[in-house]
Amino acid sequence: MLIDTYGRVATDLRVSLTDRCNLRCTYCMPEEGLQWLAKPDLLSDDEIVRLIDIAVTSLGIEEVRFTGGEPLLRPGLVGIVERIAGLASRPRMSLTTNGIGLKRTAAALKAAGLDRVNVSLDTLRPDVFKALTRRDRHKDVIEGLRAAHDAGLTPVKVNTVLMPGLNHDEAPDLLAWAVEHGYELRFIEQMPLDAQHGWKREGMVTAADILASLRTRFELTPEGDRERGSAPAERWIVDGGPHRVGVIASVTRPFCAACDRTRLTADGQIRTCLFATEETDLREALRSGAPDEEIARVWRLAMWGKKAGSGLDDPSFLQPERPMSAIGG
Ligand code: SAM
Ligand code: SF4
Image 1 (cartoon, protein in one colour):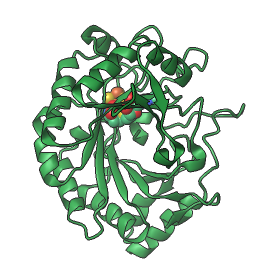
Image 2 (cartoon, helix red, strand yellow):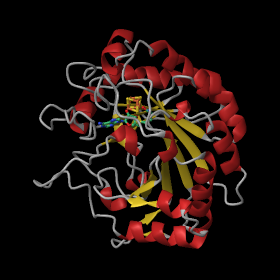
Image 3 (cartoon, protein in one colour):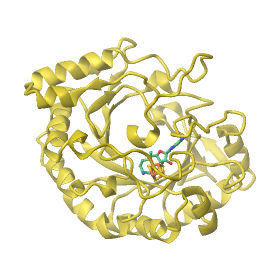
Image 4 (tube, protein in one colour):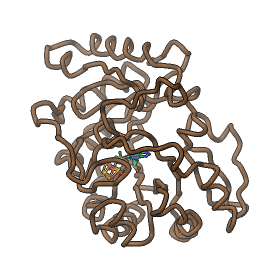
């Protein structure tokens, strides 16, 4: 098991497949992009499959989520999914994507064994999408969502970040649209993980703001804690059900005490938390010929150092050097 000193057990592994992206969301990346990782520094497909195999066979991982950067930009993605689906201890597998290219790949991903997707979409307005992501690709995301739904990568979840002055007023419209299309909407509070360090607590749209806005049009009933488990999203039943809406309040209502995550970056570093300032190098262990048991031991040791919380409320909080796109959200 991957247990930490606070007794939490990590069963959910987030795997970043690339730090590159075809969008430039303002809360994530600067307009000019970033210095991408060099190809030799990236884990190969074989290395990724081996680490996931160790994680599910020896470390109790039950769920794997592929992310990035934009994971659909990874050429070997379908093959990786297929190989993980073939493991004896097959984990549940999902993908977090901006949806561009999903129209083309959804059916192949489903056939390879992917269970479901989270697609990020912050607005229903193409002009606002262009301002938020600095790319004119709204239509591609909408088509990608539809393709994921039709391919059976369900439930399709939609991740939305609300930004002041851009899409802060769209929560009720987005929920009405998600209910109509059968997508499960989850709002994520903006976190200080952008490469430009532009996050300001004062300006951010909080979970309380989002709920107040939704309640102008919908009746929301809280789902019980039992249903929530270790999920980061608090969920509400919409207008008596069956639809739900989630809010991930990482800043104003952190859920660190129930965290069950461990993260692997595209260059083979273990991170115990999005906000961790330390990493553990598994790539070095892999490439120096360490056997599976040794890699599992290093991973266990890394988790033992997991901090109690994100430290966001601590006056000495320091934003991690790695931005969200290179960690894997
Ligand atoms: N490119 C893919 C995508 O956008 O879904 C996967 C990677 S992205 C880093 C994963 C999720 O993190 C997305 O839903 C995105 O909206 C969210 N995200 C990125 N930067 C964020 C920030 N500063 N605060 C909160 N969420 C953020
Ligand atoms: Fe790319 Fe996802 Fe970051 Fe947007 S949030 S820039 S889509 S990695």
